[in-house]
Image (cartoon, rainbow, N blue to C red; front, side, top):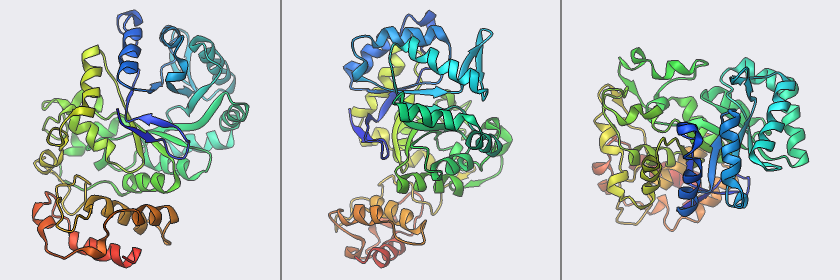
Length: 382
């Protein structure tokens, strides 16, 4: 298992994490086995958005004797009321739900506590100005939450949260179809068929800005919806009208800036193991570029996808990494020190480019790589 830094939190997390979608199956009888599989394969991170007390209690029992082996990402404002899940901003309900969560999980702290499901700017404003954020910060100060985060499907909200200085982790929906769609307060709009009827070109600028801003500020991203609820794995259901593999979806998410872990929702042991098998998959099995280039009515022409099809460079330049740092630098008026330092430690730099054009002949997306190398040399000085 490979591990990544979760932003600036100091946590090292497995790049494959567990979602909790399948925990409730079979009256939670499979939960202990899911955690056994996770422990056996080095998965140390999981998300628990659900407020179902039966599921929370089953996770608590599964963690007994091995709490220190897992990093818990769980949610404030996800409460259980009248026998069903409710997203609440009522501070009394939020407090009761959090205290119940700790009790059922049999722990005295949550590693990453997320303010749950904030998809509108008005909701974000109310959270900031109301009691929810204040309560979350109190929990962090007391050590009941070690790191504070937020979950959202809206890049506009996520950007505001990342820039606020209070949010250290974002749980955000990342997949190659969502990334084409503009910010919207209604998550159902991201998957509506009519929104994929005309030709879509390149990633939505707000989403690109979000990933680059999080990378620059050290806000870690944990990924939900990498498979689009499974639709991206089925040609008949995918908005792209082409099926992707589990490995391709995971690799796409993991190559976005600031992404630390992908939370895979598995409804069986086999599905969980299939996602974990990403770690030993070949580069050919992970390669999403040919599929993306063949999507009907969807084009990433001119947009670097960090897929590394441009390699190998005769000068051994890591073109994808240089381009990623170029994008991060261009997003700011001044060159961020962290970006400059990361660029500096690359073994080879843009200034070594021979302008032979071999990389451009291999790029599936017709990216002007030579021009990018010129710009990188100008910005970074080498």
